[in-house]
Structure formats: structure tokens, C-alpha cells
Length: 158
Image (cartoon, rainbow, N blue to C red; front, side, top):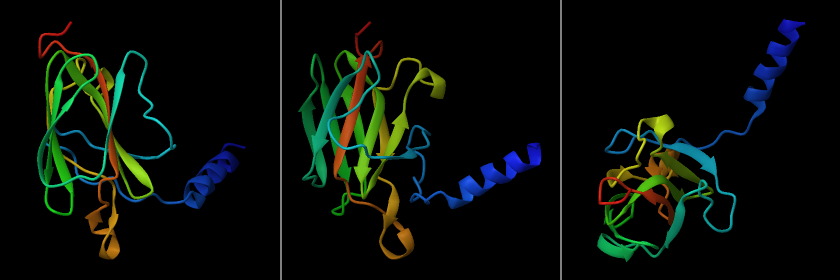
């Protein structure tokens, strides 16, 4: 009976539709996980504050006010908007970042389960999933970025 269950599980995995690859880890070493985009407003864990940054994105740095307290500096690299960095000033930290590009999005987790009990105040080289260009060799262009913020011990928060 156990062998039949194994065969069913293996068949289910093989029959699942393949997602594009998430791509390389961020500068802080966080490996993104490609997840489906559910549509609608950002969905953040309880206790988090959501902020969506929408396109158009252009190369260079932009300062964005964070709800509650703080400023997010977003730096886009390359004219094709392939990667970005962020820095937070204020009393908040990033707990999760969702990067939408193509049909799906990459999730960067900065929570205790991933080695970041207090979130992060900065990271570099974040990107959307791979899948654009010949043979999926480039990241999809940025559509929007959803940040989930928590109070931060880094910048004077609790």
C-alpha cells in the first residue's frame, strides 16, 4: 500500500505545471521563492503594514514614505529594470518583499524562520522571477513591489 501512495505522489509532482525559476539569492543571501500572484491588494502577515510600489520604474533612486513612520529608498539598476536595492530609514523593517514580474512573483522572507527575527533594514539585488528573454535567461521586468513592514529595533523602533 505504501508503494502505491509513493507512485501517486510522484505522479502528482511530475504532472504539476512548472513555474519559472526564482533566480539567484539577494545580497543578504535570501533565496527568493517563486509564488503565484493572487491578484488584488498586498497580503502581508498579521502585524505587518503593507506598501505597494507600482511601475513605472526607472533607473536610479527614489524615496517613498512608509505608512506609520519612515522612508524607503528604492534603487533600480539597469534601464531594463532587472534588479533593485532597498534601504529603510525610520522605525520599521521589511519582514517580506514580493516582487511581481511576469505571471508570478518572487517572495523574499526576512522573518525568524529564515534567520531574520527582526526583519531587515536593507537588502540588494532583488528581482522578479526568471523567464523573460531567450530560454528564460533574464528576469521579468518589474510590475510592482509589495513590502510588508514591522516595527524595527534597527532604526529606533521597538
